[in-house]
Image: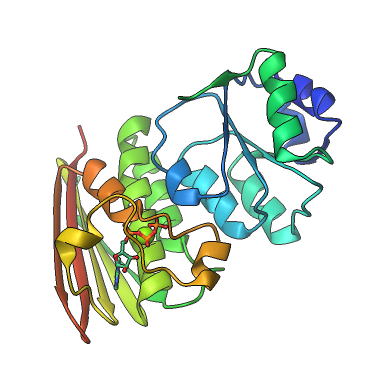
Length: 114
Length: 140
Ligand SMILES: Nc1ncnc2c1ncn2[C@@H]1O[C@H](COP(=O)(O)OP(=O)(O)OP(=O)(O)O)[C@@H](O)[C@H]1O
Ligand SMILES: [Mg+2]
């Protein structure tokens, strides 16, 4: 699915990278543990997390993760937006809980990594 | 291409700056047209090492050597050191503080993941003095 489909499915709001909504995303991974995320070797991945800090963006930068969804309306800071923009990472906020976001995306065909 | 050398300082406890060295090295490797998969391996290992200094040590520095064939990285810190390296290398072992866990770290995955992502990995530590990690990865 495309980033724009994810935004729609999650009733989300893009806060960085709104010009990159045509990117294809195939897999989803939900975690608040950045070192766990850093063990992945998966392309076209969406990271779903309840943690909103600069290290999430750094992790996405190092692991070549193209899109991050922050659940429960966790607020993304200006520094996070700046770093994401510099690294061409799409950020979106969704009011959904982690559980709901994951189920909706899975029902619509996003694949698990493991 | 001649050999290149870079040095970065790392502040213990300062999570907002954790990753600046990894980010800089990623840009350099991209400019050198290194394969994206290799870049990812190198910078993931470096970033985990950088975060370990921030999370567990007082301060440190990173030395990066790049030549045509490989990248060598040394992460040298002043800090508490690691009393049992075999134990620290086990997946899931962590002594990270609550503050570190709140930042999204402390799963006990960093060191094993650094080893996995590099071609050569060595760690040396002296309790009460500090820790040095040396890693090399072939660039092609
Ligand atoms: N530079 C260091 N100085 C002192 N202790 C360290 C250092 N690096 C690692 N350690 C010790 O080794 C343990 C395991 O490190 P490792 O990087 O695998 O996990 P972590 O840092 O606790 O969590 P994670 O890396 O998953 O976020 C740490 O919890 C800490 O006790
Ligand atoms: Mg670690």
